[in-house]
Length: 333
Image (cartoon, rainbow, N blue to C red):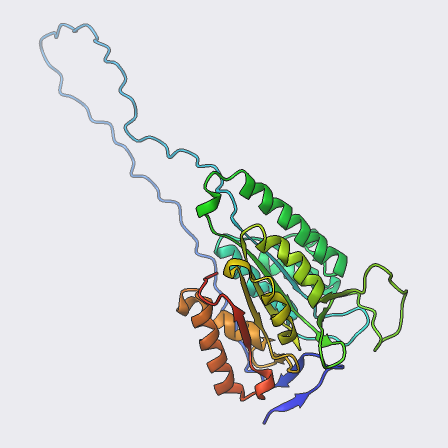
């Protein structure tokens, strides 16, 4: 039986299932006993009755060691960067369950592929996220609107400097990946999608100060403006949004699909919902994408098809809640 529960206004839903008990195997560390070398025994020569004239010692030149140490290679220049933010514990609106788990698995995948990854979260989950991915708590910023945009701005500056100093920049593929997990909504159910940041103040929850330069949301038109700086610099942008209503971002972001440099994947259509899956302990989009990436050689078109097919087969969502993809689908992570 599937219970469908709406969490908040137009927010990611939770589909509750009975979670199987997970027994994590305890892997005891392998103890390597030191190998004891055999005792070297002294061999005696027999005594002789005649004297042996000693020969002058001839010193031979020392031959160079034929085994040369491997040269230390400089760290390769990073070509691919990513920002990941997920919020489970919001300041003012209702919380979610697995957004912190979503960004952990994305971080691990992208780091294994050589990406330089910036990660942001809510303050409550920073410590456990840091522990899971081997960072310090201080390495993880709070996912406020200003921190998200300033991080993206810094990433763009870093990539721009690298590209400008690359003699092969015209033949080198650079990628920037934007991944979010959390609440999303629309302004009026007709147009305009946005993603909630940690410190959101909005009309549904009229509390806190009034901001004149920031609304503490990631809006479609704001995101379009900053991502355009990447595509204008010949950087391929991949956006993955595990939030409700993010299908509304697709049209705006495809407006900047310069030279086929934009790919966008969302958890639902404009009026659809994303889901927290209790039995998977992840958001639906994150779980089915990451599950199918490796078997599809990280190709986004094939990964998306497998993910959507599995999702429909296992969860039977409403058609508004189908995953969406737009732009260049033939690129890989």
